Length: 384
Ligand code: PMP
Image (cartoon, rainbow, N blue to C red):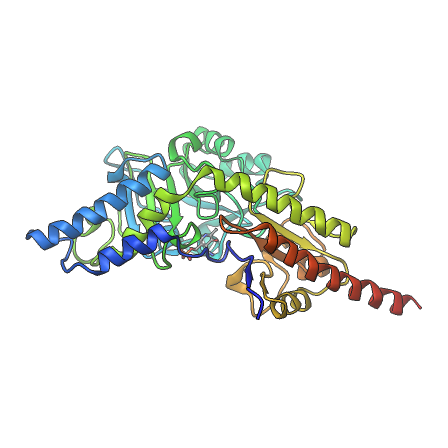
């Protein structure tokens, strides 16, 4: 059987060798990171090294990194009205989230439904800054959550500008940086974010680990998970040290050069799609996008048909977000961008990563050509 080609990195990335090694080492140790004996201290050292590695990727201080079970929990923790700034209570009266956020943000965390407002995006999938500015007039102390880059389209949000608008309105900005981390700059300070969420498994660490990062003197006043005083009281529960060690190693291994390679391969992929199917629409193409993501649709081609055909030919792609696959509905991201629902239902996402090769792009385009051929034949038959 031919090798399989994996084009679903935005759903989850393969485990990096460095992460596997770090996890193997951590799994071989006995000790609770909270214990004072030598075994406990050795495990804590592993965890603190991982904390520094995660902090470095996010341009933060290690003490401002709180480990969680993943980005879903980090997002849920961050979306809380109870916030302290400089040690003082600074409660938030309203939550604003962009209409294209991951469901773990769109569901609004710990805010009541009536206190959550969705922010519109333009047809290119970028948060509408004029609408954002206007919306913030409806709040005295807003909390705003906008992602660094969208998981379906790869469109990068203008976080620096958004941070200026939010802070001018006495707001606090949370950024879900899950898809951007390790692919583009995700420095919490240069972005101007107050909080950042990261997920280990999108950058080559294991699933089930993540972090909520604060820029400094801003904190969540009420932990989501209460119990023991782990994570400086910010998140109770004995830490998953092996996963955390793998997460840290993956952050340290993330390289800028990966982005250059994936950009070239992604551009090759898109050029090949355009040749085989000139009427293919690539969503968000006119705007800055992640180097590894392409979301496209061809009139008349169903996403299910394409995904099954790709899978039978050894290629893993997805339709919109993996969390909603299995039921191919029009993606809420594309609907928010005002895309025609029929075209939106046909959207196929190919996402690449550091080990994607030219041979895999060839394999993808070969399958696409066959698919495009049968689609064009179908169209001719209908027209005849
Ligand atoms: N935010 C975004 C943008 C994502 O793509 C995902 C993963 N699909 C999450 C949050 C959730 O991350 P996790 O799987 O670590 O809970």
